[in-house]
Length: 501
Image 1 (tube, rainbow, N blue to C red):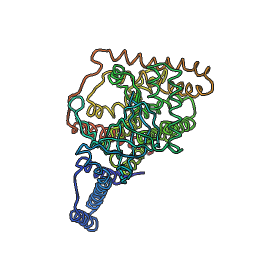
Image 2 (tube, rainbow, N blue to C red; image 1 turned 90 degrees about the vertical axis):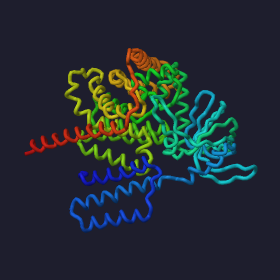
Image 3 (cartoon, rainbow, N blue to C red; image 1 turned 180 degrees about the horizontal axis):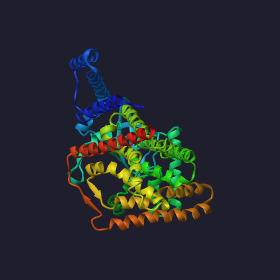
Image 4 (cartoon, rainbow, N blue to C red; image 1 turned 60 degrees about the vertical axis):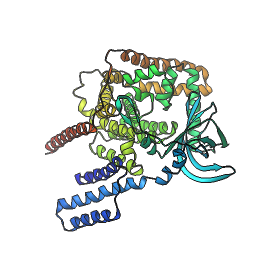
């Protein structure tokens, strides 16, 4: 059991990381550092009970600040700045470190650059670049490539509604410090066999089977829902998904994974608790490996595991604190995700919403039918929406009036669609006739989603833009929400103690 003091220390550590994230150029000199440590030590040795807690919290806050400071790699960040500032085209060489993303006639490659090529000589480098290529060549994870480009330093830009997208630090959280374009790229060395290259190859083969047996745009939707593949649905359809608040099922997100895992638990409700929990855990691990186990997937999957754990322990409130610890460990590993990774924020809050809010919604939603798990789907959707909606409005600026209803109507069919789509892709390798048969209900379930999306997107005032507002309103919202949850938990604890007495 984690006490209040331990929670205070956790939030002190996160507060130090958050402060340095907001003020990136902040610096603590050695003299100031020793003064803080000295004062904290004096308070801890000679102060009272509360002064000791404050002193220790200050030290832990400082450790969080220093942890973020240690994660700033200026050597990698500035190694190509001269060429970027002078707009000089150079030849670089490096390894493709993530699965290439195909975008029509272009590819997006993330490359770990290890060499600057100068004629017949190579100068060692250590940085990472997001490179866009303009060719039809097929690239693979692990290949060593050589290319010409003029490196550029990523810049923030104005998005819809006057919101500024911090593109530079969005990339920097993953260690990417430059972007570039090229039409001249050559493969120096083919990729060596590894677990990731094998997984990416398996994923590509499954995608080929999906596109073979299921027509568009249904196949594009399935590729996103099942394998996290960013495929083109078309501008109109993508806008419809945003209008209805369903874009999270098209692109892999922590919000998506959390809802899907909860839906799987609901659909498998006829099985014993531990049996369906084991199936869900195995499904999470298999899913993470199948889509390549990238940072976003790993974070979302870890969060989803805690949903399953919450069910196993019968919604004991300690699971909330365990979830907090999981988030802290992830932030300790990569401090940048706390402030600069929207996916992490959505994953954490959506998962916490499913754990903390779903039980509170059971009684208010008792009027809904349990047919097709409609009531549970509604509770899961509303719980997650309550938690993530302020961030969606702050970062994206859209408020979907129909989002909750559409999510309720769609959530129950997501795991069924994923299962049918996966079986279709697998059978496509060795049983084409069966694959064609199973593809029919898979296509129908996907078409059901598309019809709902297109219908509700055309509803007048289905979505409206939220003007840019201060982040302080988001903070006030969450303070009030967490105070309410704390009060409800406290009342529940008092009721349980009264029953025991």
